[in-house]
Image (cartoon, rainbow, N blue to C red; front, side, top):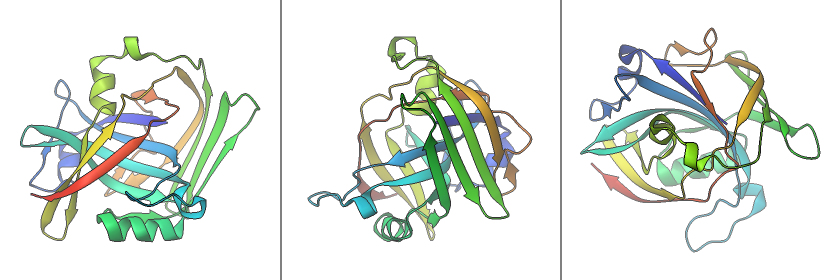
Length: 217
């Protein structure tokens, strides 16, 4: 589930390292709250182990560009597996945090889902949605859909240095979805989503993703 929000440039600028430019779409700055389940995660040449390789995750990201290469920058990343959070942070430098996340499919067909995310006392995300159709809408993607979902690198800051990771995946399969309820008491760096509704919502059944090539910039 992608929840996309338009936000003021000055709000995002102070949260993104100076070495990265904010990537805008027709003058608008976007952030996205993305809730999903990771499955069969493993380093290259190693097999996956379900205790570490499957977990729920929520990340809050914005869109940046450097050297004419657009990518994403994570403002926060949280997952519900303590060991996986530790290993991911150690291996990648991305700042994973452990939090409780639950996800419930409310009927056998899998068309209704409740994705509940809890951050004690400070954040909460509760999303209930219905899939309008399971058919793909690849031929109906707008330029904005592509801008927000087709990103093939990510940037991260460690200490005083910037790094870039390459990403590969097939284009996201986007399917029609309708929000039934949404409570996003979620904030990062003074930017709060509590009183606003998303400007755009996407749902996808998922894609296989490869990440490699940590490059110091």
